Length: 298
Image (tube, rainbow, N blue to C red; front, side):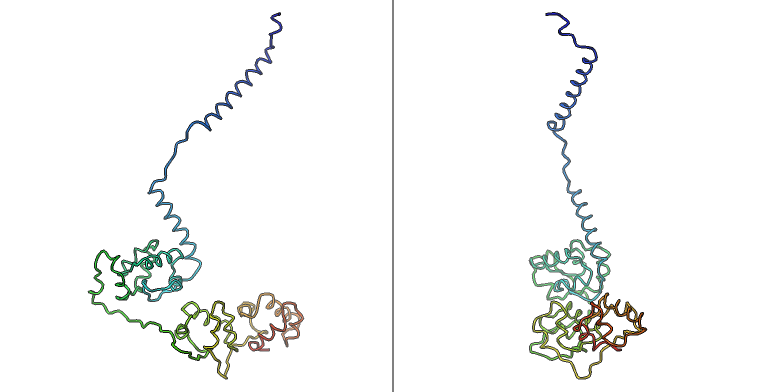
């Protein structure tokens, strides 16, 4: 066998060497990635607390700006979730309060209530003048009290608020004049639905039929039996020829397309002189006309 049989040209030798080096580098990278343990960085309690506080701030900010806040007197030991929403509490803050009460906890004073998890100092300072804790509600469960409250020793005159008792028997109310205080006396009606009824009446311009109360979603099925309308109906009329687009579209019985059609008729003919011109548009039906007629002045 000749030596020439084992001769490899220089160019090929360089190529082989380069290939071997690349293979070694690849093998080294694979070994490092899959076999050398990576250093773990455990989450400390401080890190977790910082993350939780950041989550709380983001969630509370998103909810706080989406609804208006009302201020009124309340007892944190008895206030319901609807009124807490009106007071500006977030959903998770309400759940914290309800869970605390469900487990037997009781707020003994306004300063004690400031410890509600997630309640910011600014929010508490706004609510503080309106926190009114009844002695009975604060002393229902003394098991959770580690110290005796001194609230009863303070000689401060506080206004007393009568509990909103429910009607024990059927009372017929005028649907166009009843206020929220009286509405809340109806079994099954609280502050939220009382306000919805009054707001819907204002948006309509007054009720012309007791059946319209059923258009407020979520009311008890037998709600109509509590109401009547007197013979002197005075509803707010809509002037289709003079009112602005914004004023008309606010009415519950008119939508954007219908108001657009009204303005189209006004542009073409100068004024709306009857329902026939509006019934030519697909967005108006005879049932729409029947509902609107008591509220329209032509």
